[in-house]
Amino acid sequence: MQSDMTYQPLFPKSDREALSASCAGCRDATPFPLEFTMAFQPIVDLRSNRVFAYEALVRGAAGESAAQVLATVDPVTIYRFDQTCRVKAIELAGALFPANEPDIKLSINFMPNAVYEPNACIRASLAAARRVGFAPERLMFEFTETEHMVDVPHVRNIVEAYRARGFTTAIDDFGAGYSGLNLLAELQPDILKLDMALIRGIDTSKSRRAIVANVCRLAEELGVSCIAEGIETAEELETLRDVGVDLVQGYHIARPATGALP
Image (cartoon, rainbow, N blue to C red):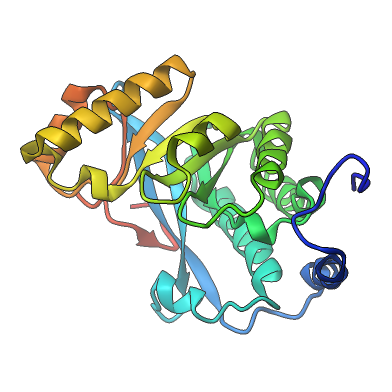
């Protein structure tokens, strides 16, 4: 781990001591209280009409929704939950992803506040990738803008560490959260995932079309790609194609499939 002289942690000393115990908890073999699995939803590249990535979405083993699973996570279990989700997603991807398409990425959501030190917290994920023969450079990590960024330098540290390892990084739900363009300027991710609230009804909304078109132009200037998520109609899809969005995701394209690729 980096020393306190070069990295100012997100948490005060008392909380860092608790986090050290939580890091040990991540290595604990005790299973998470609720059994869960992953569903996969494709992100499609309209230019090639091929799958760019599959996003891993947590689901309960008995069919519980993501919200039901997340409701069982508390400050004590958040670190182990985050680690277990990553490992589960990678193991399933190793078994399910088509061998003849080695460039398809696996997109994993992560909680910035569940990462104490990025190079330490990624070890279990890398070990899982080695076990199943999944190339680490195919990993894409999404963090959500709706999680209030109390320590942007900490999140920047995560993004930079992940980029140095060859991972793709993405801001999820862009346009729905706290920091907006300032977060984009500070973090410079590889991808912006446009929040579905901007996408809903874009075919009949001049303001939404203008906002999405200009965000995409700005992102292109910064070398950042855009994904439109939450697409539910053919009209939304065609409008997004017209305004220059190349990467798309949503129920109109494919619903998530639990433990399988749709």
